[in-house]
Every structure is written in C-alpha cells, then in structure tokens.
Length: 221
Length: 300
Ligand code: B12
Image (cartoon, rainbow over all chains, first blue to last red; front, side, top):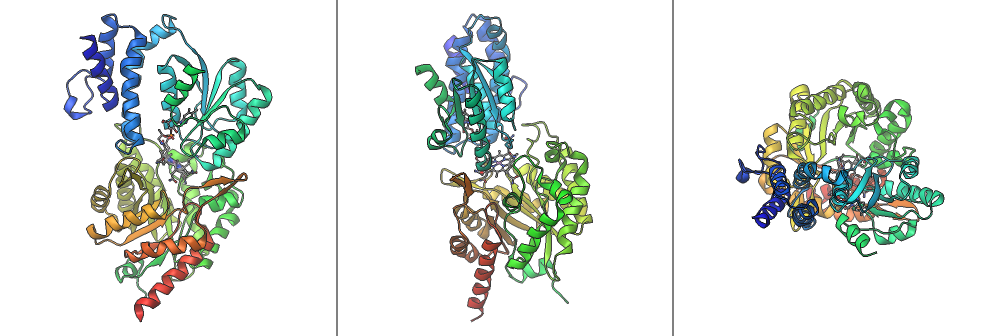
C-alpha cells in the first residue's frame, strides 16, 4: 500500500498534480494530488525522509531528465515544482522540529544583474529535499549581500547561479570577494552557460550541471 | 504613390531590419544592472547614435529601445510609473533620425512573468500592460510593431492582440525557438504550427523567429513556417550564443560568417531580415550587401 502511494506520489510530482482540486493534468482530474498523498503517507507513519527520497526526489529527477532531453519544457518544470512545494508544506514541520536533521546550510542566489530564477529555485528545492537548509537570497544578488548572509550563517556553503554570459563576469567578482573574506567557504556554481573550465578559472569549488550532481558530490566528499 | 510598409512586403520585397540594441547599449556604457529603457531619457544621444548607425548601415527598419519597457519588467527597477515616458521617448528619438521611406518599429518583449494559471500574472493585466506600452510607442510615432522574443504562445497572442486593438498598426509576431531533440520549439514547448495558427488568429501581419540559438535554428523555423502560411516572414537570429574570451564577451558569428549563413535563410523567402543579440551595424552592412546582391541576381 505504502509502496503504491509512494509511486503515485512520484507521478504526481513528475506530472504536476498539485492537489485534488487541481484541474491539471486532465487525466488525473478528481484524483488526490501531491498534497493529499503526502499527508496520507505521513499519517500512516511513513518517515519524512523516506517520502522525500523515494517519491518527491524521484519525480523531480524524472522531469529533470525529460527536460534535459527535450521531452519536457519550462511549464512542465514549473508545475512539477508547484506540486513539490505542496508536498514539502507537509514535511516542513518535521524538519523544523528537528525530527529530521539538517545536513547543513547552503546560501543560494542568482548573481548581480541576472534575474533568471527558475534554475535557482529548482536548486533550492533539491537541496531542501535532500535535507539541507537553504537560505535563498533571490535574484540580482550582490557580493555584499552574500557576505552579509555568510556573517549570519558562517559555516554555510554558497551556491551561485548565472544564466547570462554577461553576468558570469559578476559571478567571478562575487566568488573572488567571498574567497577574499572567507577563504574556507565552499562555493559551487551552476547555470546553462557555465562549465568546469569557467569554475576553475574563477576559483570556485565546483561546477555542476544539475542540482542532483551537487548533492551527489556533497554526499561523497 | 509611395507604397506603404505592408505593400512593400506584399510586393515580395525583402526589407532590412537592424541588429541588436541591448548588446550595442552595453558596448556604449550600459551596465548589467542598469535599466536599458531609462537610457532613452538619461542618455538619449547614445540611444540615438545606435539608431543612426543602423540607418547608415542600410537598415530600412530600426527598432525602438523599448524591449523591456512594459510595466512588469520596469517594476524590477522601480520604474513602473515611467512606462509612457520611456516608450514615447524611445520612438521619438528614432523618428527624429528616420530618413524618408524608412520605418521605426516599436519593440515589445515578454513581461518576464508567468501567466495564470501557471504563474501569477492575470491575462487581462498582461493585456493592459502591452496596451499601455503600445499606445506610448504609437504616440511617439512608430510605424509598426515587433512583438518579439516570446516563448509562451498565450503571452505572444495577448501582446499581438493588445497592439492591434489599441493602435491598428502592422504587427510582427515573433518567438524565440530552440531545438528540443530534433524538433523546433520554444522553451515553453510551442511548435511552429501552433505558433503560426495562434498568432495569425490573433491578428499578426507578419510572423517571425528572433534571437534563439544561432542562425541554424532560425533557418529551420523559417523552413517550417514558409509552407504553412502566406504571411510575410521575419528572421532575426542572434550572432550565436556568447562566450567569454579573456574576460570579454564575444559572439561567434562575425559580420562575414553571418552574411554567409543568412544566404540560406533569405532563400526561404523572407520579408524582413535582421539580427538579434551580438549583431551590430557591421553585420547589418553585410546583410544589406546580401539583399542587394540577391535582388540583382533575380533581376537578371
Ligand atoms: C526563461 C528565460 C528567461 C525569463 C526568466 C524568467 C525567470 N523568472 O527566470 C525572462 C523572459 C525574464 C528572460 C529574460 C532575459 N533573458 Co532569458 N532565458 C530564459 C530561458 C528560455 C530559460 C532559462 C531557464 O529557466 N532554464 C531552465 C532552468 C531549469 O535551467 P537552468 O537555469 O540552467 O538551471 C538548471 C541547471 O543549470 C542547474 N543550475 C542552475 N543554477 C545552478 C547553481 C548551482 C550551484 C548548481 C549546482 C546548479 C545550478 O540547475 C537547473 C536544473 O537542472 C533561456 C533559454 C534556454 N532555453 O535556456 C533564456 C536565456 C538564458 N536568456 C537570455 C537572455 C539574453 C535574456 C535577456 C537579456 C533578454 C533581454 N534582451 O532582455 C533577459 C535578461 C533579464 C535579466 N537581467 O536577467 C539568453 C542568454 C544568452 C547568454 N548566454 O548570455 C538565453 C540563453 C536565451 C538565448 N538563446 O539567447 N529570460
């Protein structure tokens, strides 16, 4: 039973079935969505971490792969993340009460001059989904804002996102400013136009094509 | 009588549009966190120098510096009350340097917000934003409009309708395409038949593809559009995707390579040819050469 619910929940995430009232996708109309199924799983005693790993992240990963291969598009990502948030709303209380432990904190933002936030929001979701606390500074974030957040959360990782070639230059400035003030802080970078070579050139600690790759790296290091 | 803009297209002429505005502004002093449309008031001479350079390079049509001039985008800079001023000025500056027989096109880009039900921007509000922008550009004297770089077909449709209903001027409906596997789609998943159908129904006079992922994708978009519509087509690819070389931003297509690749695009049968991000006056000079040369060839 639980196994079936987990599978159905993964499908709700992948296909963006937010809750029972949601009209989208049409063929699931009237059926329970991510919100109700997550509630039901928690009520029958399934561990929050288990729900995350075995359903929510499975759904997100599937839609991410389809996006990467041109079988899904930005609206599909957005509706999937809506479903993901609907599920996370039920899980949050458990994480916040300490019933499930945070692995650490990551400060996130899209760099100065850049207002693309879809990728950065997915990064936040995947980090949260994998047990990290995310401090999301939003878009168009300056070096000063990152430094101020680091003062507040000193042992955090930093995740920088950039989608514009012009703002990749700002990413370089921000990375250097953080490293100058706080050399031990680990900085990870991502966004479509980036590469490992660019990461190396600006002195960051790793480029990852997808948030899942960053999580995998953190688990093994 | 001098033929009108649409008459010239209907006669089968190819009109030359301009190259990029954004990347030219950056070359002439715009920083990444400046509001580009504010330059119309703060640095009119810079904006006007770009218009003049394009006309001098051979453009028949020059676009206004108003791509992000809708209320939603301007609010990101706290400038949402300046919509009318910025847009009217963008058009006036262009009209002041527009030679006889040439045209000024009002540029209208996406709001950057997601429409309902996926996002939070209501359809009616988006319509009003586009109408507000279009009216200001028309007041400033534009001859036609480019609704461009659209990715969601609903938004493109609303913008085309708002422009048409509020100004009655000719309007281009242009979207940005990429390759999804082997299929030409926008990032929102819109394919060419859907785009052609819906923007034609919304009242577009010309259909187009702009920006995107280099000349090759725009070529494929034109090849898919040509057989399924009798409307004139517009092709304005970017000069490829930018790269960083020694801390400078460079676009892969030189004016020469751009001209070479655009031959195939022109051969599809194009009403308006031009460039997008990374193309400058020199690219346009080369396209002028291409069009003139092509015309001579077909007259022989
Ligand atoms: C959506 C979009 C927009 C929307 C943004 C909406 C929003 N709220 O984000 C709007 C319409 C506002 C927009 C505006 C502009 N855009 Co835009 N936009 C895009 C588009 C279509 C998709 C970007 C996206 O969201 N992708 C989906 C996400 C999921 O992918 P992603 O961000 O890469 O993230 C993934 C990974 O990279 C990774 N990741 C991301 N960050 C990080 C960080 C870390 C640490 C890690 C580990 C991983 C990671 O995780 C994600 C999931 O796998 C792209 C074209 C394309 N098809 O990619 C153009 C594109 C990025 N835009 C472009 C441009 C030029 C612009 C504008 C300048 C246009 C203009 N002339 O005004 C403006 C700039 C505004 C600004 N100041 O930022 C160009 C950039 C060219 C370049 N290389 O410089 C592109 C490539 C389009 C093009 N072909 O020319 N844009």
